[in-house]
Image (tube, rainbow, N blue to C red; front, side):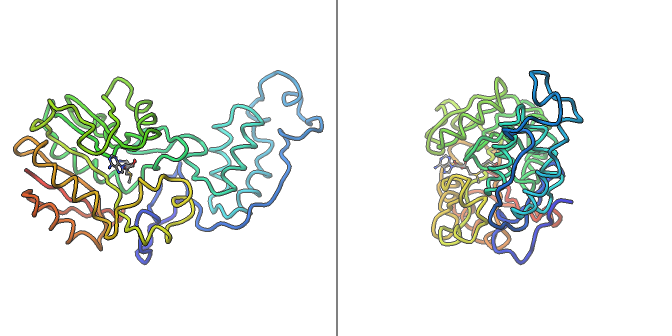
Length: 314
Ligand SMILES: C[S@@+](CC[C@H](N)C(=O)[O-])C[C@H]1O[C@@H](n2cnc3c(N)ncnc32)[C@H](O)[C@@H]1O
């Protein structure tokens, strides 16, 4: 079963619930060396592995016990589920060995297998790019409620582009623009959004075409919100494998939000909404940030997902 969010963990980003297909480790120990049946220099016991014939599903399952043992030794609580996902993602024995090695060394499962489930969609996740969290599905749910037919939607700080893609799948979006400062995120979002959106690279609103000014109905902005000093408290998966730019919200965690709130009024249509995620601990200050910027805030909470979302209307 997926790990449940812990109320006592100081940073929700570190303890987000995951889908069944994105099981998460709870702890990690030093990885142990192992030998892989498919990667072994010795002749394989299965004919398919020693010939050019593609392996059958039975052959593919042959290394499972070794993989599970390695993942478990590395601290992966959902070792069986992860082994199945890694097996499904690997095309060759060499890839399989490399993926298991990366996972055992602490890389997020989603970056290893190359995808995450988000709002029932399979979202491509490249190495180094922020892994979309299950809790953020609540932001999309809230956005759907305020998305008019033919809406102009912007997914600012888009990462993989998961939010924009999920909202487009669930609501009558007319035009979708996504933007991020990180070139790796932009490339990943272009793959996920393809023709469904125009993906721009640049610093917040600077990335957007000027003609969108005053025309945006829904501004999704899952900005980084971890206070700088608390990044060190995040699990190594996030700290070492997601870009610092994706996590660091400045000294109080609200620095990027302040800049987004200050610009939102210029880009939103009257009646349009800015939606962002925050933590329970930050929500009062986050609401003050958007009201100071002239927006009207409503807070929505999902206890099960441990998600807090602010809807700020122009
Ligand atoms: C918390 S991640 C969210 C990614 C994605 N929206 C999601 O929820 O999965 C924050 C994203 O903001 C981007 N970012 C940080 N500062 C930015 C800036 N000044 N301009 C544009 N993007 C920025 C990061 O590169 C990262 O992809």
